[in-house]
Image 1 (cartoon, helix red, strand yellow):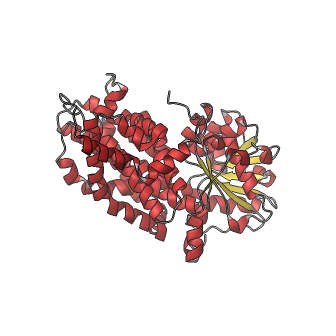
Image 2 (spheres, rainbow, N blue to C red; image 1 turned 120 degrees about the horizontal axis):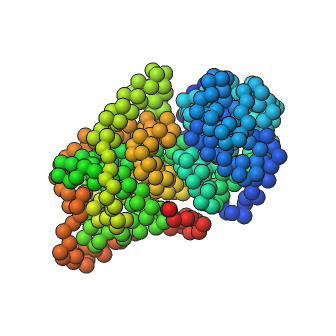
Image 3 (cartoon, rainbow, N blue to C red; image 1 turned 135 degrees about the vertical axis):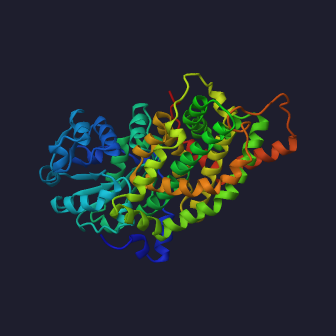
Length: 490
């Protein structure tokens, strides 16, 4: 492992890498042809490895898995995932020397050991791929010069990569070629074919860089994508219990509310989500959002600063070296929260009920996506990257909360995302204590008393203009126009 790669670059190249962000036209893709007939070996069969492998195989590619000897001998879950679904599994020594493309989909904290083990076994002129560039950018891994290094990074958990593919769509994907490792100039064609194999070309592909993907990914996952969902879940549930709302109803409203609210967000942005509210509720949500943004903006800026400097990565890697002491402590603390321990009612909540009775949740979503997007863009990250890392990926994470609450989200997301999520949450909850104290059940639990649905016209016009005029709404409208194949949630 070498020094932090980003920090070794001169400022000009840092800015160039951060700003690398080009939306690719569908005409630039030729399916999986560049990989057809090649031997593709995936290292690791966890959440990303398993589901990406299924998509790639269904797209007509030759896929097998290589696992550590112990995982094979002990028939661990990764071995079961692969063998029970008809994939061939072999050791590093058996499969890596035959591979034209080695896809590293192990957890981030294992990347250094994995690459140091597989690189000596890789044949001359092979290709190595990542789905997250942390090992290259933050850990400074040096790859053998004859090896092409690419990245294909679907902007969602692995489970959603599979579900969206099965629905005939895909998830937006960032692709990149590591400039120091493209000796034959073939990296981009291989990356495009890989993205097509997972279904990413149907949803939109950005030509990015390893640096832009890592810095935006770390920011998105620890703030809006995971941190806000965790903080919002705990605070909204506790507020309802404090105000006498039935615990089982409160549990269901939060657990399934994120999914319902962000489904509207996915299809029509913040504007559509806010339009699902009554006029009085829209004004209330907008005002709550502005308060949240004022409180949380310095914290978002600090997270971005720590990501850019490498402080966050170093802190997390220190915890890895300390047997994940902080991570495991925070994971256990989350498991013991009242929300996580609660059970949800069998009572049906109509779709509109999640909006009417979850005004505060809508405000959390609006504040989080706008803050994350604006903070990334102000740092030099392209608007398209910032959109995918904030607004578009949020519904895919919200789907996880709907399955098994915060446990499911934190199990499925990457280890870097889980650590960052806890880091955000433990700062945000005390920061928001005063804000939460003044709220009542009208914005979280029972909805507004709308005997009179009237509002001041001028005020409503100003609120609507503020909602629709943001940068994230402008870029979102453009990017969603490319997503004509997007399917509604079942």
